[in-house]
Amino acid sequence: MRVLQVSAELFPLLKTGGLADVAGALPVALAAGGAEPRLLVPGFPAIRESLVNECAVAPVALPWSEGRAALLRGRLPGFDMPVYVLDAPGLFDRPGNPYGDAAGVAYADNHRRFALLGLAAARLAEGVDAAWRPQIVHAHDWHAGLACAHIAASRSRRRTEARTVFTVHNLAYQGLFPADHFCDLGLPPAHYAVEGVEFYGQVSFMKAGLHFADAITTVSPTYAREIQTSEQGCGLDGLLRHRADVLHGILNGVDYAVWSPAHDRSIAQAYSVDRPEGKADCKAALQRECGLDVKAEAPLFGIVSRLTEQKGLPLVLEALKDLIDAGGQLVILGSGDARLEAEFAAAAARHPGQIARRTGMDEGLAHRIYAGSDVMLVPSRFEPCGLTQLYGLSYGALPLVHRVGGLADTIVDTTLEDLAAGTATGFVFNAFNADAYRRALRRAFALWSRPEYWGRVRQAAMRQHFGWDDAALRYLAVYRDVIPAGSF
Image (cartoon, rainbow, N blue to C red):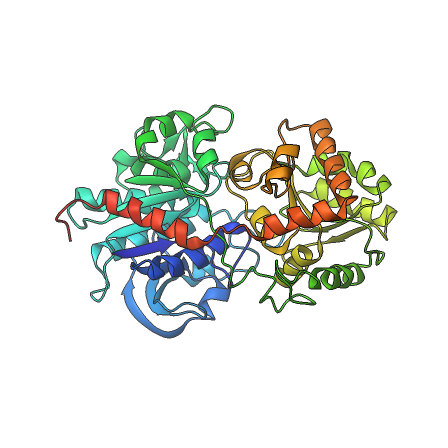
């Protein structure tokens, strides 16, 4: 089964969040499951500079007049399969992150940049590479949503038989643009309609994926149900309910070749569920690195996250005094909302031995935070899947989470019953408010005061397995369902 994965990010070369981890790990798992996957990514500098053994496949005609673009095929480090890179220097050769400049301001031509990514996917589906033609185009998040629309247009012209799968990683980020940008997208005029890409007078790349894809997936079973409600549907719940028969919730996996304390070269000391002693060394090393008091008896809480309201971080700030007064420590890695950044910076200045703050995306430090922390805080208002809590489980940093989305699917609360059964793996609160969060925080401190019980829960957490092998089998089943019998 020939499957083209289309993503704007790709670990380890370009990452702003969990999308990159998925795009990097899923193709490898699909190949292990018997598929023949390839990748299509934009030619951002980090990717373009890493491409080797490249050859030109075909030019890509732009829907507007200026500029040039071409599809290249080559190899990227860490991937056994060929990779297609959309080479368009005028669109992608820029500083900053994939979506905005160094100040965090979104590029004004993002609609062109990611429309062209979808158009390139359609050209591959039409067979511009004589050596390989996908049966399935799997588009990830709004940046690749127009791939589904372009391929639907190509099918209507009988240029391809390829089928499309669209994965929602976060419905809140929809790729919305003014209606007058539609003429830059290269789509048939009829696609700007309620039964198309139009969304309350704007163009929605997310809606393009949801409407035109042959199957829709999202990254956890609970989130698949939640986005069909008005509370979390972001205005698209009606469409999602209408397409519920092709909507699947498939939990993200963990690449344990990258996220395992037994093999992690970024951390101070390797350890495992059966030999956990090295975790104490990792904690002490993290405390020294971040300027915290080196105290084994202080429970260390970690946050590795974008600093946004969605991640529930105002709850952490509201209950920060509770954490400090109880003798806890906190290390934060991330950047985002200016107000949240300022408040965490001020808290670190007030409590230099108990709170440390680091900004940006530092992959090595992220690994050391998971290895050195006793608890990972993930109190998200909503969370499609969440990888932070899964990495926390692997490293024995017990997740403290809000019962929502993938967090609800993966973490078992430390109730008396689950403690007795040996199934508890973390701390879960139900209502999204400071009181509920504080109660979960108190449960964490209570368990910490009982080292024997803490060790049992940590052991249960580290024995959890959320590998990509299971997820890949689910995706392969979805692909088989959308390929018509006798095609290709």
